[in-house]
Image 1 (cartoon, rainbow over the protein chains, first blue to last red):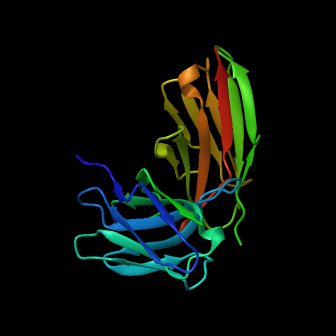
Image 2 (cartoon, rainbow over the protein chains, first blue to last red):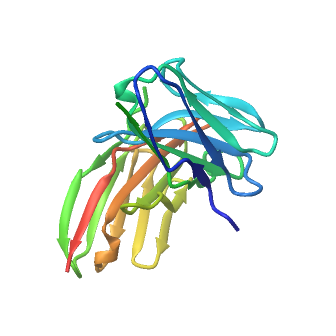
Amino acid sequence: KAGVTQTPRYLIKTRGQQVTLSCSPISGHRSVSWYQQTPGQGLQFLFEYFSETQRNKGNFPGRFSGRQFSNSRSEMNVSTLELGDSALYLCASSLDRATNEKLFFGSGTQLSVL
Amino acid sequence: ILNVEQSPQSLHVQEGDSTNFTCSFPSSNFYALHWYRWETAKSPEALFVMTLNGDEKKKGRISATLNTKEGYSYLYIKGSQPEDSATYLCAFGNYGQNFVFGPGTRLSVLP
């Protein structure tokens, strides 16, 4: 069974650009959540999608958005990139959206904003 | 804003030592507490999901306990091995909401 796949693995952008990250969950998983990891910080929750609907959103500006498709694949978009957006972005999938379901993480996308 | 704390931030132990670390979380609206192991250059991997007060879980040399009334969980590693070197994350889940992760405990096991 394939794991959670994130693409691209690495990305370099400049300030003001926008970026789209992709996440393919484990087959059969309907919940996809996104997290940001910066040095010295824990995983910060961005948003969660379940059955194509955004169920929860973290405390991030509106420049961060996402969506989920009917096959449960999810994309995350960041517009008007800032230097502080440089981070590792992880997505995680789970069978259901209940918080007693363990999360399966992808390898992440390392975004560098210059 | 929910706050999840972990201590210590980092520790170094010798191979064969046993060790433990703590995760503190809000005691209200508890739904689940997760532990993850995150090795360098890999993805975080689930160790335990605990939902009931008094839960004890074990996986090989690693075990965890849960106290939801006072809002803490302990992770124990018996006879640490170099391959146990990783960052250990706990995540607090309240009902119907997202997870809040702690900052992690970075463990280094010296051979």
